[in-house]
Length: 241
Image (cartoon, rainbow, N blue to C red):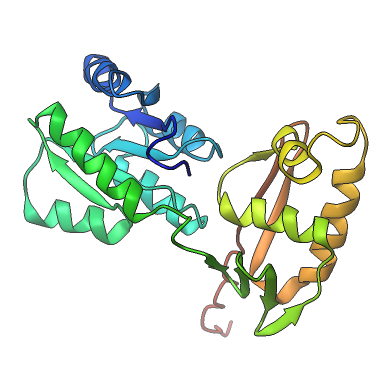
């Protein structure tokens, strides 16, 4: 996530295109870049992008509502700040949104100035520069010390493997493209067509092991996504025939 002095990228999600336009136009005046989405599935996919710094998310959306979008992001380990919007003012709905993982909420109608103010607040609150330790599943990463622990035991990762893991964990639940990895880990020192990333990713998976509680998914032709491994299904009671 960027510092607030940098150009922030915000995903604005509402089924009313006029509302997306109003919010986006206002934020652009404050040097905030925006992308619009108008339904739940599109919002979920867009929010996984590593260059999205925050999401303004309407509660009522076609196909998948805002509560479910937020819930799925959090279950994936995606910690992107979420400001939820709702036209309904019931306390129970606001509580549900916050319990699902939203950082704040606004009830329609609202002033655009308040959207901007609350957005700045949650961006500061969730700025990863202040959160130097990241834990997902059984993997903990300390950015200051550049050390990694798996199931409480320190893992001795080579420098490049550590850098790949840091990039994946910082963007947990979101797609990390091959181009981003080349830029941040190799600084364009190798040919983007080479298999160097695949080799490092294979070694990283082996070093973390199956008990790490995380899974790294390869998205063919796009990149990779790290997320919390799904919990094993609890077997139901035995039945006799």
